[in-house]
Length: 394
View 1 (cartoon, helix red, strand yellow):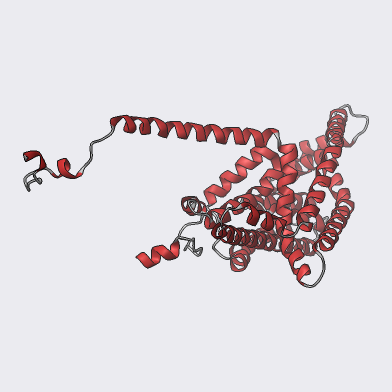
View 2: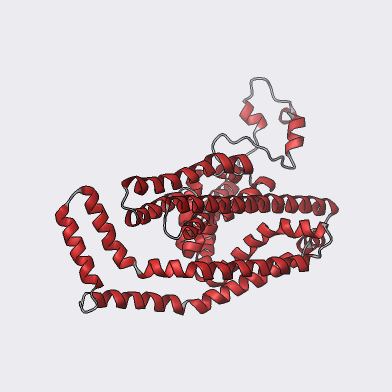
């Protein structure tokens, strides 16, 4: 009878309320935690290896998806005006091909010229630097080396010519692969844009319940709208920056101002590092192109001023602060994708990071990742499905 008596006030709380600890399950949990971490680490390493070895196929696929996200608002806008999606997609692809052909035609000459004159530019740069330092002996020595290079009978010219031939032969050997990848990108973008709402239709058919269908469709449309708006806006801003930089270089008398405008547009897709690289390149070209010290200093300064105004005033005002990213994560993303896929990986690193950020904003269970990717003191503007219920409970 004493066993069924209620516990007295003097009994220990731990003895009354806490159930017995299952040591076997606790030990299994302690073993499973590092095991899951190890499996996740192996998965990440395997995924990175797959990205590296399959870059010939995955790189054009990623670029095609990004381009489709950029152009999808245009296709939808034309569809609302009565133009079928396949027709508008075909028109956009034709326009893209025309832009690519025109760019290659107008820029191939200046690019080939700068690449071919790279050895002479090196010695001209040494002469300019030496002149600025006032070291006349270094000026004479660099001038003599430059004169020796320009003499065709001098044997020192031969290794330079051989290296240029090797570089151009290597570039020529990669043209078929680049053409095949470009063709894959254009065809895949055409199919993605012409398919219209096929993805949403398949998503609705795949999810089991009506609640899941509505929720999945809403999240997918919000993600597509946010990502496409961001990518299209950033692309237009970068094109505007390229036009401004080209006009500034033209006003200063820089050679090939169109080339520097295109360079500014492309480099501005790389945060921080792109602006620094552009300032350095423009500074070097100004140094070998101008004799006036004021113009030599003014050219990189104006380029830096354009990129600074764009990065601190224009882009935050147009895009907003919700998609601003953690600078450390941005730098690591650029380094990682540059290591995997080279220059093209550097260019698409931030758009891919933005896609991950938007997905983490709208999917449950990824709030920690969204907070980690966001910039400092960023107010939350996204209402997740559980937020309203939590607010009511609070």
